[in-house]
Image (cartoon, rainbow, N blue to C red; front, side, top):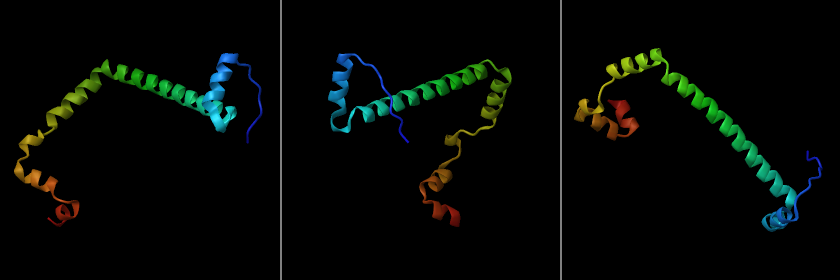
Length: 98
C-alpha cells in the first residue's frame, strides 16, 4: 500500500527530477532513490560493524595463535604431487568412481 505525502523541493531539484523521471513519474523515481539510499545506509552500518569485529580480532592474541596453529597443520598444495592434480582435473563423477 502506498501513502500519499507532500515534500518541498527547490525549483532546480524539481526540474532535474522531472528530467530524470521521464514517463515513470516523480513518485517512482523518488521511491527508487530513497530505497537505494536506505540500502546503502544499512550496508555501511554492516560494514562498520564488520570492520569493528576484524579490528578486535587483529588485537586478539588467542585468535592469532589459532591461525598460526592452523597454518602449521596445513599442507602446501604443491607438495601433494601430480596424482592429486590429476584428480582435481577429472570430472566429479570420475573421482567418485575411484
